[in-house]
Amino acid sequence: MTIKHISTRFALLVAAAAVVPLLIYGLVSILSLQRGTRESIVNGNLNVATRAAEEIRRYVSTNAELLKALAADLQNTGLEKWQQDRVVKNYVLQFREFREITLFDEAAAPMASSRVGPPRVAIPRSAPLTLSGVAMSPIRVDDDLLPTTTFAIHLTHLNQPAGWLVGEFSLEEMWRMVDRIRIGDHGYAMVVAPSGELLAHGDPDKKALVAQTRNMLGHPLVHAVSAAPHAEAPVSLEYVDEDGRSELGVAARIASLGWTVVVEQPTREAYANATALQRQLIVAISIVLLGMISIGYLFGRQFIRPIRTLQRATQTVAAGQLDARVDIRTGDEFSDLGDAFNTMANRLVELQENVKRQERQAMFGRIAAGLVHDLSHPIQNIGNSTRLMLRDDSDTESRDMFRRTIERELATLKRFMDDLRNLVKPKPIERFAMEINGSVAEIVESMRGEGERAGVNVEATYAEGPLVIEGDKFALGRVYRNLITNAIQATERGGRVAITTARANGRVEIRVSDTGSGIPPERLSAIFEDFVTTKRRGLGLGLAISKRIVEQLDGTIEVESQVGRGTAFTLRFPARDDRPAQAAAS
Image (cartoon, rainbow, N blue to C red; front, side, top):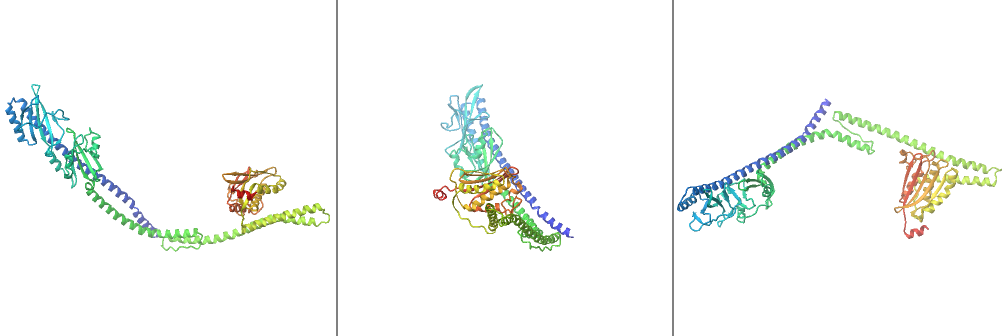
């Protein structure tokens, strides 16, 4: 029953985990909707632009063919001049897109015209466009602000030039066709010439641009089309127009004319339905997502509550509060886990007491052994020397030797007691300007005798001149003595202990190195801790006290060691180069 209960809650958590797949599905659906909607809208607008381009092409081509048919009637029927005049007048009356049709001979003299009076049209000297043999002049705006072009056909008779048929053609119907192209409420079409001139615009607010012959090559879509003049496939593009509105534009080329039909619509309007559908989809997904998250949160919170309780209790125990306990009564494995935690905590309390007891015993035993070891030798020497001094047969020289032995061992005992006292309550250090070379030299000279007795050569090398720091001569003397003593004791007979001073990077360095046995790497990081020693005798307080003295003087102490090759300690202190300090040190 218990396993089933946990499995049920875990299943609910897995169900809540379905939020991620739902979210992924929602994102994929939204992206697919956006892509599909955009393709559908673009294709719809492209169809509109393509149909408009075809209608405009057919409109212009049909009228060009009408003029071509008239030219065939005039050049092959052998009509008299008055008959030709009547024919062209009837054509203008029948096809009102032609405002004027005039027949010229090869010398450019009018032979027949639909206009009463001198003709307004003339034979074009050059025409950039030809439709099935009909030359077409560039579009222009006439006095009535209507688009107009000129068609011209070169007539031949018996393969000989016979004149020109020129017709002035109004493109007003093309304007009406462009005006009728509407997409939504704010989508319009426009027609652009190959050179970029605006020929027609369906937006009433922008019709004045046609009369101004506005060049549209700066338009993003027109620029894209002009960059590939031979491409016939429709082009679509989203861009920001000169009014700062985001537009969806499509373009279709009229290959025979070189014109481009552009249909543009504000993206906000073009994607309005898709945006509304997308918003509805997001709302639906959000509601389902929120519901699943709420269910997952409620059941997940209930499921995780025991885990959080155990977590807080574990952190409390890790912080050292071993009296922390948990009360979990869920009736499942979490209850068993809570009981196990409480049992563990009780056991930790017992183990901690045992460890403290053993640590105290070990510490007391170590201190006692160290005291016995370090004190027995000097006390024994003092006792022996005292007994020998009391003998009647001892001479004056022997008595002096016994007295020096007693004084030396008493000094050893005093230094030992000072180490213990300084460990419990460190003495304050008074700083004053001091010269390093002199203070090191004094200690080195006093330690040469100890080195000679141990068969170790004590050498010193001093940097050139004055090395001044702020320190305590007696405290640093204690540090030097500890380091040199340790070096002598760690070096076999015939070895060497070297003391050098130097100056580097604004700091004064004192280096004490030996050729002794070295310190193993695993013990190197702990040699400055209290009661840690690598020697067979001693409490292990010398290096710990030395490190404290050095740090109180704003210095550093470093150690380098290789087993079998020796050890080197390096002290570094900030140098004092100002004249008052130099004078005080001297």
